[in-house]
Image (cartoon, rainbow over the protein chains, first blue to last red):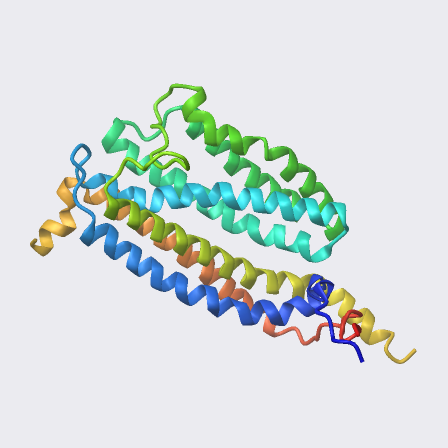
Length: 248
Length: 58
């Protein structure tokens, strides 16, 4: 007997991934909760008052991670939707649907917290700045994806329509990211760049990165949690077919 | 630092606590809605089909 190989395709099946997802959730949810608490502690008690902005800058500990998550999750959504479309993979398409709600939530959060920061700092709740406008478009892309999926009855057709929208919308992500360089409008430039040293005090940076890690872990946990509901709802038909044809 | 001083956040209390309150409601709301969906789904009695990929590899 040869050595048993691990079959990766096994977990491409929704029925097999369902129990695995259930086992994975606590491994992400519990660290997420701990890191949210640690991040808020560092953000409010360790990080010093900003020399220019005073205390109001503490909004960035939720604003920046939320804005990043909105963009990351959209890319992830488009990748899963694309794989689901190209390879006719049901689980991948379900993953995209599951991500869309959390992505929309984080994008909404980044717009609202940005607005709450903008009012005392810039003196306005909203301007049609390049980055803010492109983030609003990201929000509409999420809403479009969610409504398109719920408007089409046949889930496989809904997946394909959603995938087209998601893949076309990816063009918006580099626009958001580079908007502060391409157009010199109100939103400030990036504080953290991959190649340069970040221009902020270490405890501030630490708080932001801890909150980002917490948001990532939270997203994975909640997306897997929602995925389980989507699997049950979509595979119910398959379960009934299997039960009905079992005796034949 | 006094407690009242901490909560006043140098006069930015509304903006800062407003932001974190909305974040708490948004994240908590997402979890709560899914939690409730769990109860709605429990009433449907069904089981997932066996996968054709199960234990097939050798």
